[in-house]
Image (cartoon, rainbow, N blue to C red; front, side):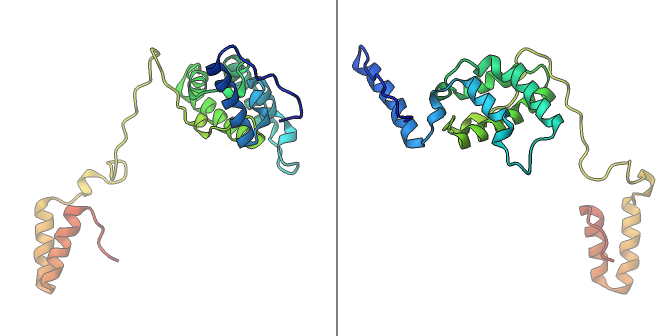
Length: 196
C-alpha cells in the first residue's frame, strides 16, 4: 500500500489466507492506517492538524478529549492494531468509566474517534461507535420518577372540575346548542382544552 514490499508467507495455508484477507480489506477500503496501532489512531484524533483551520476545538474541549483518551481509551486500544479493534474493545473502554455520566462522555468520545478513524483511513467498521456504558457489578443510581402530563405543580387540584361540575356545564351549554354539551364532556374527560 505504501510502496513497501511485504512478506506474505505463513506456515499454514489458513494463516496465509487470514493475512491476505486483512490485506484485501485494507486495499478495498483505501485505509492505509489499519496496520498502525491504536495509539496512532488516538494521536490522529487528538491532532489539531486534522481539524479545519477555521474551526479548531476549544482549549477546554481539547483538554477533555485528551484526558478521556489518556484515561480510558489508550490503556485498552493503544497497543492493538487498528484492523484488530473490535466492538468489544470499545465496550471495555467505555465500561471502565466509574459512573454513567462519565461513561456517556467516553461513549461520545469513542463515537467521534470512530468517525475520525473512518475518515482518516484507520478504521473501516462504523459499528465500533455503537457502545453504551454498562454498570457491571457497580451500583446504579435509582431512576428519578417523572410525571407525564399535568401535575399539581401546574394545576391546583381544587381547580380541577368535578363530575358534577362537568355535568352542570354540559346542561348549561345544551340550552344553547346540543353539540356544545358533547364538546364540553369530550374536553373534560380527554384532557383537551376548550377552543378559544
